[in-house]
Length: 183
Image 1 (spheres, rainbow, N blue to C red):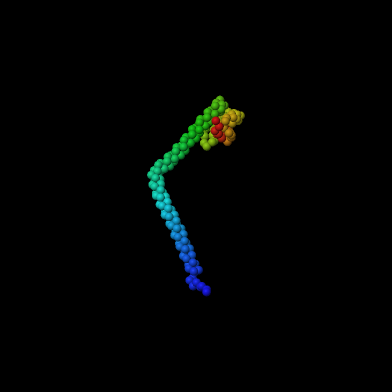
Image 2 (image 1 turned 45 degrees about the horizontal axis):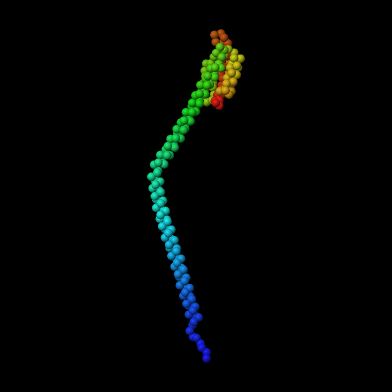
């Protein structure tokens, strides 16, 4: 006799295996979901603490703002003072050059043959006007001025003959470039 097993053993085993797999899959899914939720909660906590830290740092920055404003004001004042000092130094150097230029003109002017009637200095140039006995005296005077370290170029702008107490004299006008020598 043959025995026939009418119970669906294979199907039951298959169903049991599917149930086990479904249960395992569900357990893994729940576990992954729990890990994601925990990770999300940790990130939310970090975000919250960082936002609180940002607020605290902003408040601290605001407390330092008056000091930063004062530093900026002091920097501006320092810059203004430095500009003023630089201007003073330039003026002092310019006045020293002017004094030296006048000294050079005075020391190089022959008083017995040449007389100056006008002297004007402006923006790196010097204009001299005067009277000399003759053209040779004017030429020598120009050479003496050019020999100075304070004068770059001496140029005769005009020369004319004039009569003074029945004497024929030469009136002249010179333009001289003034330089500040490197000391």
